[in-house]
Length: 78
Length: 192
Image (cartoon, rainbow over all chains, first blue to last red):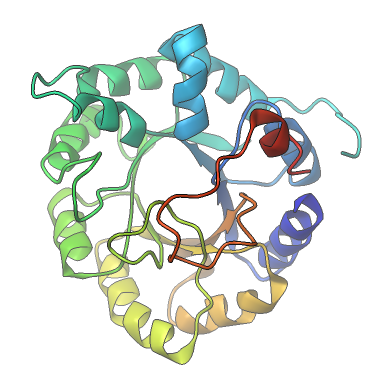
């Protein structure tokens, strides 16, 4: 799935398209996705963020996802 | 850097399990914005099981002072109902999904068959007139990209975009299975 997303995103960008992502994204699978597709414009996230918010609080969960999306640290090849 | 658009559907789902208005959707939108969200996403399905139609103008009003930098994103099937909502609140972005009205969740992206392209063309044209960026929800499949360009041929590239479906429901018949097989956290984490 990561390889397919990466290649499709790369080719979409080459065609001048903005690339967004969504569905089943969470704090564990976002970092490798961001590392492979650093030019993503947007991730829309609801279910997993809300589930995390039950444990972390809503504001903390949103901040954790913002951090995951804006982090540029190299997480290696998943 | 990628923008986080917080989807409030699950907060609305909890609210709708009682008739007290608790939790207050607008309060959660305020928290999300204060915590750094760059946008708010709503997917008002026809059965209103989570976001209701009247939530959309209320959220748009709440967000108004910070728009358009703070983006309202309406997801939905491209029908007259979605166009009416978009005309009312002028969202910065509309994400079009091919879900049947009773779909459990968005399990499949656009294939952009001839029929789907005929369905999409007038809606894309209308949304462009409203200055909304149009996003087509597609599977991570490079063969669809040429048809994404084709269906929006008179759209500037920046106003037409692709949203990649990042879930792994590949073994499910599209839009036919009302309840997906439960997947454990370990399985979800192992998507890649």
